[in-house]
Image (tube, rainbow, N blue to C red; front, side):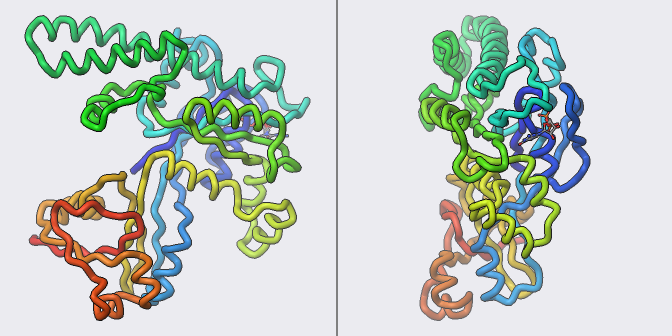
Length: 364
Ligand code: GDP
């Protein structure tokens, strides 16, 4: 599945947020640095109203939302790229995630220690980003040496890899993360293979006090400005409230949210933002037994989408019977859509569209 790593300085609210996300006490929040030592992994359901609408129409017995994985990654301080403060483990864990949710402390609370003795989320973000950029520069250095040998041996692929590494290096040396480099679609695969830490999409999560949960505060405003300048996402959330909300029943939750002037729980906004950040899309399978949401990357073909359900579906793929979400809903279900000529037979090269209701035919 797709994995988002939760990172941030110690004591910014990562564990609190992770607990709220996964509704477990697995990641114990505590008021001292380095509390979370091993990465904790949790799965969350992706909120999607469309799935419930489809299930209602098809009278599906079971509803199975798409899932997203969050990993709570141990705290980091200055010097991580030199192996200080759990540094190496931290970098290794980040290398394995698809996207980064960077939690920033935007709340004032004298009872909660700040490692650098002041609340300054933009400086915190820079501290972590700097460590990641230094780590990237180091790994680029190492790879360049390898490539030079390969290029001398006439390896063409090595030439284009070296070109990408050079572009990343230039950005990093100018103090910019690798994600600011513009990469051609043709180079995208090779670029991803470089596994640069600062090339991963980033979502800044501003952790604010309860009273700022709706509108944010001066700290979150400066984070939003920084995010916009770097092409990163930004959400405002109060981890402490989210943890409370996660323990409420559904009806109580709605009441609590409206008292705070919020429409949607911050976690739902966070999960949706994570989904968007990863460039993910959803397709559905719908029947009387179950209605289910499946996650795919943008530009996924029908056989690849079938492969998300089972490898055999991809190998034996014949065609996908396809109904657009809007048609399924406005016409009132599969049979009606079919009668109206809105069920299409799509072949191997079909690129699945977000919201498609699919039914795969395959050889076993
Ligand atoms: P981590 O080190 O980043 O995982 O931080 P934790 O989640 O363990 O939180 C550190 C401390 O900050 C705990 O005592 C939390 O209760 C507290 N905390 C977390 N979020 C908030 C918040 O929004 N407001 C306040 N006042 N305290 C918070």
